[in-house]
Amino acid sequence: MSIQVEAVAKRFVRNRREVLAIDNLSLEIESGEFIALVGPSGCGKSTLLNMIAGILDCTAGRIVQDGQEVRGVNTRVGYMTQADSLLPWRSAEANVWLPLEIRHVSRQQRAERTKALLEMVNLSGFGKHFPNELSGGMRKRVALAQVLAYDPGTLLMDEPFGALDAQLKLVMQDELMKLWERTRKTVVFVTHDLAEAITLADRVVVFTGRPGRIKLIEKITLPRPRDVFRVRFQPGFQEVFERLWQALEGEIRKGEAL
Amino acid sequence: MSISQAEGADVGGPSLSRAVAEEEIRVAQRRRLLLVAQVAVGVVFLLAWQLAAGPLIDPFFFSSPYEIGAKLVDWIRRGELFDHLFYTMYAMLMGFVIGGLAGFVVGFLFGRYDALATIFDPYITAFYSLPKIALAPLFIMWFGIGIESKIAMAAIIVFFLVFLNTYSGVRDVSAVHLNAARIMGAKEWQLLRIVIAPSAAAWVLAGLKVSIPYALIGAVVGEFMSSNRGIGFKIAQASSTFDTAGAFAGLFVLAIVGILLSAIIKAAERRILRWRS
Ligand SMILES: Nc1ncnc2c1ncn2[C@@H]1O[C@H](COP(=O)(O)OP(=O)(O)OP(=O)(O)O)[C@@H](O)[C@H]1O
Ligand SMILES: [Mg+2]
Image 1 (tube, rainbow over the protein chains, first blue to last red):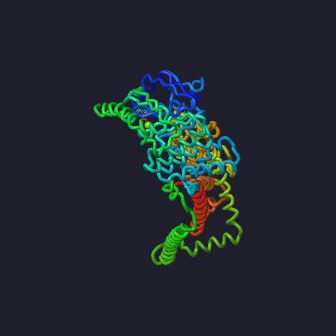
Image 2 (cartoon, rainbow over the protein chains, first blue to last red):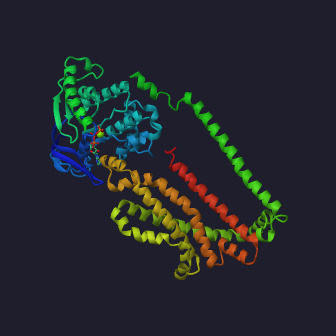
Image 3 (tube, rainbow over the protein chains, first blue to last red):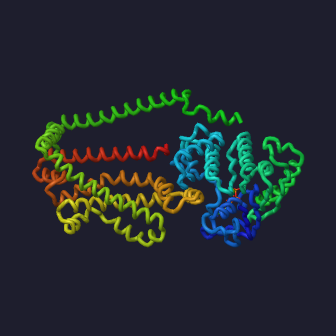
């Protein structure tokens, strides 16, 4: 479940305009690693996840997962997209068990697993609700339960907790941390929240502004298991935060100057 | 932890059932009121017609509700009505099913395969612009004066409506949803059931709904042109003998059929599209 991003570039050409979203980006993600990607808006983070998920082709370079090049849709990952991808005509629970239904898991097993997952994301009473009856943050949590339902070895998460309030975000981070400690999945986690990145990740990757390249990789040495409610008060957290923020701030200001 | 748990608590539980009940009563009251108004409009119209027939308008050309009712009773008593009605309904429903299925399949294929749609687009557009009614004489030549030509008339009209709607519906399926299902492991054939069909359902149902009256028109036009059975035949026969009550009676029957069929589709729509709102 290791992922190698090898000299990848992505150029979009549309309406007689081209955008170089990512340029010559290489990154080695180890099996079982929790890696966080941060960077200015529009620098190609979602684009990179889309390429790992096989939804987009690389313009140059290649992506290899477990020794196998990603070509076409990658079913070896679970992907929580930035855009809402729940099926609006399915209730929350039917969305959660969709991947199990695709795998022909028995009805009873589906229902049991779904119940446990909805409990985990604190949505027990909402199984029968349709997505348009849920708040944005609730939909994100349903999507999280869905991607966990079929237990993929690698998780791609694009700002999964961006729509949640600060408290609920901590609760969800806590759940994710526990799950990760237990299962040691490979997680590629995109976020705008530096503190969140430091709290969760083994390594934080800072992207440059577009075209996205790697500006800095910071190894987070805070001891595990981490208490998401308190890590930010641990010695060392602030220094890392300062360092990452400096790298990031420069890129954000550059973007504004354009 | 407790913050978020409160959110999920007692949904659908007893504390909410009162709000649900109140909402339901409000909705039911409103629906009753509207129903009364609906019926009132019909009653007022028929009364006005009845009173005006004679003093204001010539019953020879416009008949009157009473005469039309008497005519219907007469048809029922002689056992003709259901015979003709069945004939028309059969032609219409067969046309509806054949045209609807063909339209769905072709619309689906065109929606999924861009190249196919592009290649055939000018021909489809050309054919679509033809008045389908003008095909009736040809169909009678090809399929005879029996029920087949009426089925063909209804089918060709329904085909286009369902085809165009299915096509738009399939084109409208979101790539985000398709990709999400694919990453979860859905095979291409599973996508039809999981994503494409439910996503396009609203369009397909809309196509079916608008095509009901057209299926009826197709079958009736066929009967106008050549037939000795069916409601269309009854209307044509009555008109040719200046039996205005008979013509109106036939139209009335067709209208009732249209209302009933639309109600069925609407009910299906409400069920299938519950998630909208
Ligand atoms: N399908 C597409 N077609 C054309 N351009 C695209 C497409 N997807 C992304 N882009 C462009 O590529 C660049 C990177 O987009 P991307 O969505 O990867 O950014 P991001 O880092 O995820 O930003 P954010 O943090 O705001 O989500 C943007 O400039 C965007 O305009
Ligand atoms: Mg993004």
